Length: 51
Image (cartoon, rainbow, N blue to C red; front, side):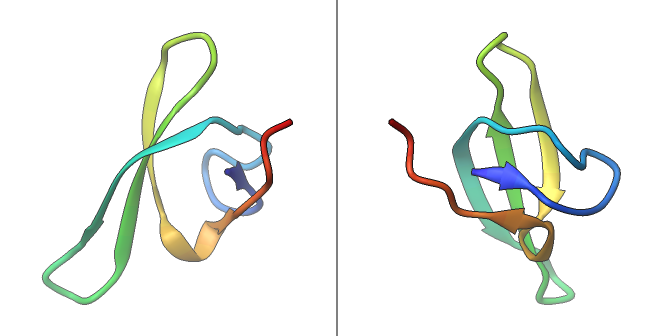
């Protein structure tokens, strides 16, 4: 996936975990190619096909 908005805009990686918070927002844990993980909201993410 690729992050298109928010704090981590421009970063990309593999979706590791998808959860829905108490407030109903979807949070996604993204694992980057360099091994660094970060969390972002589902609304900030765009799905891209890995080649």
